[in-house]
Length: 184
Image (tube, rainbow, N blue to C red):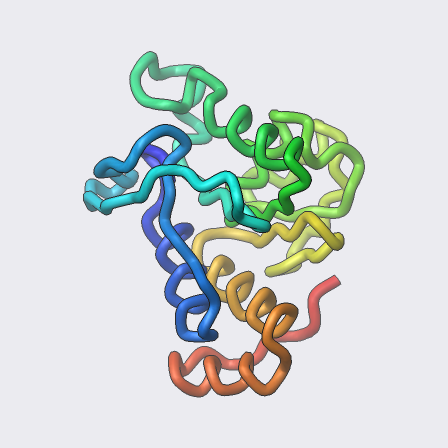
């Protein structure tokens, strides 16, 4: 998490993965601290962990990255943290404009990906093979999802990937979120 991130981009996948019985943590790139989301919600995030396999980057603050001199957006810290994770062999997922942070950091390249519909052209201009209209795009060690609520579907997709379709179905029923068409 980072200051200015979208709360649901982080909390949606977190809840879904936790319901699936997976070990999931909210972390920052630096030290344990309170993070203030784009809507003003304050959330506690733990210190970073270097031993995690997957890092999910929430969206938010993308439009502010060049206008603001405050927070993490203009520093490139979000992308740098993701790049360091990938450099250790870690896998990446992104919700909404989290894909933009990954694209800017050179972590998507020409791979298939998606993001919030307002940013499809910008992500394509970075070189990505943008899958317009897809909620979740899985390209092995890179999984991206569309705008805000798509993060919950990303969570369901990862639950199925890691724990199987039966666990996904159990989680879908528990959180009352219906199945969507298969991912690309």
